[in-house]
Length: 337
Ligand code: PEP
Ligand code: MN
Image (cartoon, rainbow, N blue to C red; front, top):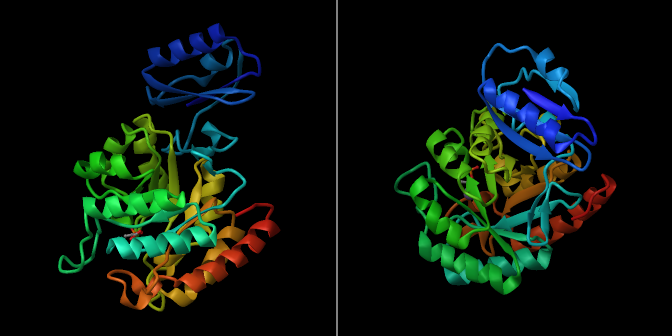
């Protein structure tokens, strides 16, 4: 249930509605916007009379929410969520580019990546230290040492860090080095991990699962939000379809759909979305045109010799050229990069 309070509703009116919601068994989450306070009720009795709430003093409107996710829905925060990390804002007018190698491979490699990423104008460097590889025999990542290299390279160039956490036991070490915790496609439905991330007070980027519907993605976000961590951004990274030319099918339409259904910032990952370096620029341009709040892309100083995902990694010059194009696309849709 969602209760939208009238403009200027008094603290006492808000409190009495919250008390009644709690009496009905709801877990109440309060969101205060510039004009309206919105009270989101999670759980509670499945049968309740919304008219009871409609006549409370100071109430503007009450909605029974049909969709199974509530805190992730656009109605909970109609104005949209902006996640600020230092001077970087996700969900604002600026489209935030996050780029870097699939995996941290060495100090030298990540330092070179940081130069490419910063010179191109991106704000965040990516790099996996714990890698979810399809084969147990593939490179599994450098672990904490990789995170140390990543943090040092980022700090040298004034970048933020995003890196993937695969398991709840990795959360403490990840919190020490990373500004954003990435949840990979394979873990989108790891509900224990999602619950643990609900307790964290750092932004989380949640990727869409390989065969997850948009509703399932939003329900997974709900796990994190209902734990009290409201700093969640979502990411379209391609889904499995019958098409084999590309590694995955980049569902560009998921971007405007999520923006409509949810208030959370939406990111596009055209690297995993296509799996091919030659298809990354057109899909990156498409994602920005479709309204993405950010991009997550793989970039490597020597992609042909990358230890993971080289085929979909852009070289330095390709990335710099793409960033120029993306600025034009962003401007055409009233945004900046
Ligand atoms: C990655 O970002 O390198 C990664 C493993 O992504 P995904 O979870 O989307 O496969
Ligand atoms: Mn990768």
